[in-house]
Image (spheres, rainbow over the protein chains, first blue to last red):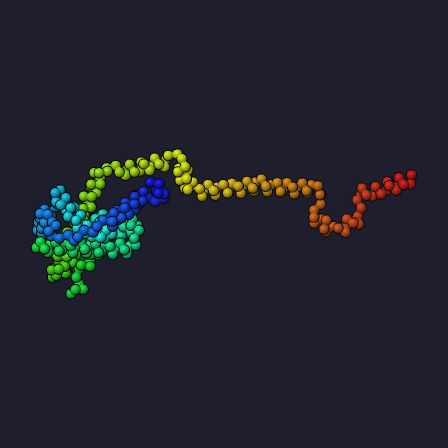
Length: 135
Length: 165
């Protein structure tokens, strides 16, 4: 609290601290191996089958939302920490590239590259899962 | 054909931010390219997963700390209001420049108010004692030497009379 100079917004100050703390934790943590089909639970397999079939497209109920959140967590765990952060903030929270750059201290180019790589890796991981499960 | 694959489009932009023209390009291409159709479907599911995960995390945060922001702001205000060295430092860092400039301005005004009039008084006093100006002295030097004052004339006359007596 003493390090807060009171010059900028408190939200920005807290976000910066939280972001750096989370990044340090994620960097220190071991990277988990790639998500493979055998890692999926029966519910997750059903969930993937359901959402990939456009003819069965329906709003997610509470249970399916929880399954989706768990599956997303495991998908994101397979990404590098910085890629994960960029993807979560931009695609998940709807932040702009400029906002992510301000919060992280990265250049806007770096944010764009991280987000691009993260989207590509997440998409390819899902493609593999769906290919192997035959959807 | 490879150059026309749409994976760059879907990896460059958040899925929900894809424009109508980009979506049209993707659909036209995906209709004839199985790989890109699969890539598009995967990107769609990936976006959905991340949205759900963010939403879930936000809900968990709200449930865990419903008044987090209020408590943090209250603690910060308490620390700001607490008396002591820290508060004075904070106050000084915020207003120090203004206070210093105000003090300097006040000192300058005091000097102009009290010292400058004293100099004028001295000049006025000198002018009263010496009833001629510097210009008079310089320009009228010869005249002063040749002309006697009335007092000098009277003194000279009465001095002669006294000597005669």
